[in-house]
Image (tube, rainbow, N blue to C red; front, side, top):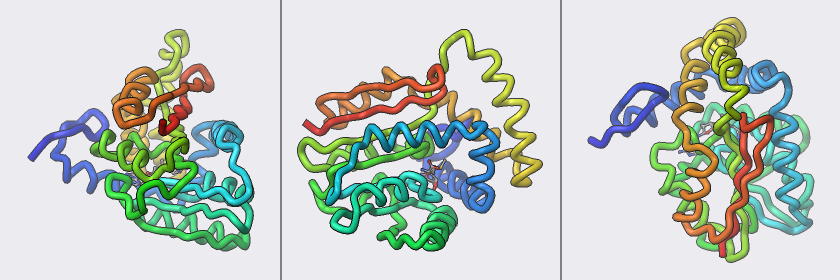
Length: 243
Ligand SMILES: C[S@@+](CC[C@H](N)C(=O)[O-])C[C@H]1O[C@@H](n2cnc3c(N)ncnc32)[C@H](O)[C@@H]1O
């Protein structure tokens, strides 16, 4: 069995998928409130910027991978209108259920599918835009997932990867202190789960930095990749064009 990392631990590949599922099963119900608390609401600005860069038009077809509680899918759906289509997907049923219920409460019915980003159940060239926000980090075979995202895009289509990234050096000390001291405590207090938020902090450090991810996207078939750093590199938006 090939080994990989789960945060700072080395585990079998099948064990990683099981543990990631455990994390999101555990936090699903408190996921949205935790996002606001942990980021001081900044995740809303990062996502709003991503939606602006997506620049979707009426009639466009978009796929949101690892869509969780549906922030991007909801914003995209408003832009593509009744003639377009946004498919909301995630590998985790608990997260997808919270997202679907939230969208239904707002009067929005989107096609919602449980699927693994590494084996997408969609035809080649089906979408104008594919997005994955804070999901790639958790995937076992990132190269396979990126190649699948490339496959389902039409030529000229774009992949948007919003993810934690490598922070600017002057901010690192404070960010590390916050990540390893504050985050798990807030996770314990609000979601009753310190471990999942320790995993969050560790998985961010194990994730490829801006330049490495850019090269991975190029290797997966994206002819042009732009990187937009936000909040000093706390997160980065990678935009890849299939060309
Ligand atoms: C941190 S949440 C992000 C949710 C949402 N995109 C957001 O930005 O709020 C990460 C999501 O990635 C999903 N995920 C992890 N591995 C996956 C995979 N292989 N395929 C699809 N989704 C995956 C998890 O189930 C989880 O819902």
